[in-house]
Image (tube, rainbow, N blue to C red):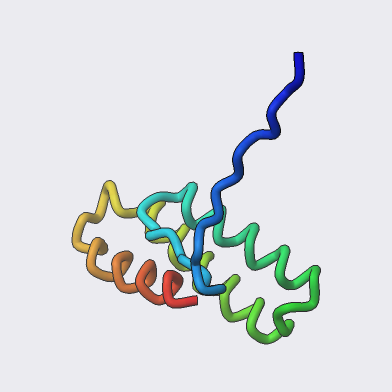
Length: 86
């Protein structure tokens, strides 16, 4: 009996990176890993990596406090929007 080769599907993305929305600490951690990888691959400058790291730390700080201080929600949303634009 012969095996058939698995069929592959090509998704045409036009070479554009599609950023997943950031809604949780896990999403922000994923972004931090992606930034670290780009830095290691020399696809990002140290200055840019430092800027992203600062924004990530601010977002994580806000996630830690959002439960006790719901008024910080708009600030967190703004930080996440900034990170999504990265």
